[in-house]
Length: 230
Image 1: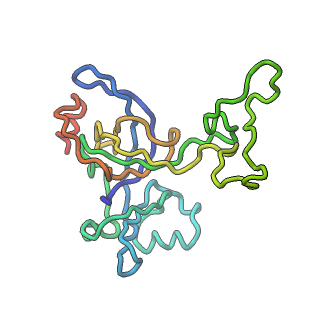
Image 2: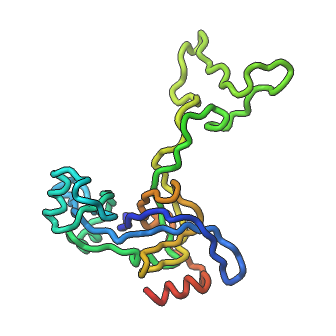
Image 3: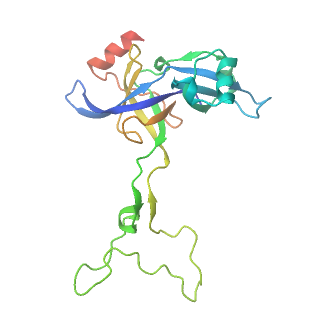
């Protein structure tokens, strides 16, 4: 897996291509991140980079975590995440390195991981798209789940039975989002489509594992400016 970056969802907008097509897009504040630890197969059993993102007050950290930042001569950071890498990429980074949004280019495809919006405790109609019971003719159960099959056969409820419960608030990865613009000066990344969570939600952005770089020739005036900056 290639290296990525941590960021924060700013909000959604739209971008117009040269052909007049309006494209829904999400603006992400991506980085800068700092390398806190380089994990190797020999020592930790796997290869990964540990990143820190967004400044944090010292008084909000416990002593072990504060000592970790002082050991590597970095200011306290709020979000700490790991991103798996291969051994070749591992040799390109060292503790204290600053990773910026310029690791991506216009036309790249990325996978974005975040926490989805929580919707609370929901019934089976909203949570699992059940059809529901008749809405008239004396029916007294309109949105109830109904029987779950626990009769003499099989005398139990099957594992994974769709039932009411908490909806949302889960780790979700949206794959193969196209990079529409990269603003290195303001640490902004614009991707096509939506990403998990609401405004201010923290995200992990990595190069897509299932899709290569886009072969589309031009993506509009904004994108051409981004190419010039890189």
